[in-house]
Length: 490
Image 1 (cartoon, rainbow, N blue to C red):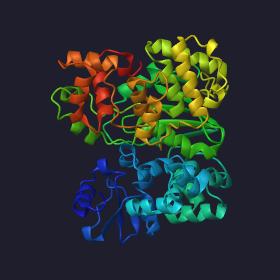
Image 2 (image 1 turned 90 degrees about the horizontal axis):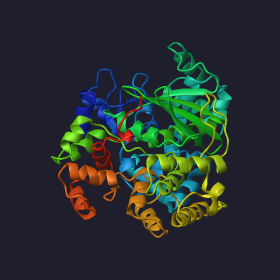
Image 3 (image 1 turned 45 degrees about the horizontal axis):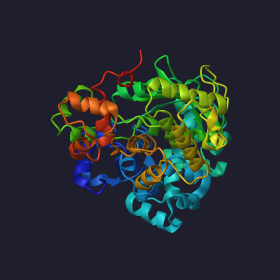
């Protein structure tokens, strides 16, 4: 979009927050870059230039605006809606892969050479993987500086910087303030947290956001010991590269309040990325709802509660295991089966606020699972153990960067994996916005009530007009049935 100057200028002059994260405005006279919704008086058109990423702005010598804080914009929705190499690379960079594995590790995961990835990212985003990772490190550093009392040396290494000198230079260059000045400036306002070890932050999103199905689904399917709904917040444990964490997510009118307990602050980037992915916060609800409203049967559902998101997962392998446990049983039964696995094979953790007790077991922890201990039909035991073996041996990957169609084919080749299970995993683990569940009981009930033919073939044909947002259409169709997943818990 950044190449459409006229459209970008209109968005800046109208301070349209819908375009935050789509592009960034750099002001030639002040050498500052802003988000489109920046509250200051818009600059003259001749003084504006536009970039597709904050990293590209920084690489061109612009510093972040202190008013609108463009580094905290929602991510571009393109990276969630696409499955090409650039989108997959952006999801991996957002997860901190470059910090942990370098550019060679990023390229290896994508199956390309480092030079090819560099060229593709430069062509589309105006910055290579190192510059994009640097911009993310700067944002992480700012969060740690402003929301914790960690010494600056610990902040530097936790944010992913290789040296304190690089940390200081980057913060000064990006924010035009030294790290100490950033902390002093933040201290003048209300402190976000006074609890040692707690990182409190706001997760932005594009309005509207309807929390009913999003948090309702997560709460209704919560696995005891791993997840819970308490005091208006969804809480769960997180398995992270350097340790573990506990997160509490609370819906607010203009943001999601996030409280993180981390055993190692180096996991902050990954934890934030997982939370944003879980809640689908980088979606573009205006574009989604506009497409679905073109169907006269869906339009009333959209109008009744616009801005529904697709509830995802913090770990693709975890959801795949839970999807198998939930085959042909009730939500309550699926939770019971999952809770037994957690108690027997999950890693115990300490929850600073009490209530959560375990991490969900990894595929490696379940690799030696005795199928005779499972209270499941024999065929489903085979399905589960086969899935776990494929995940543990890395023959099957269900990460945010996984190719959607390849993963579908690999899942369908496993015993016991029908269309419902495959598409559920595609929707929630892989994040495919066009995943569709024509065999789902809730979808078929909704179709009957709306006067549609409820056969899978007929539903698939009707859903052609909803593409590429069929996963969001599923969320609206589920609201036709009165189920706990559709309601924000009391």
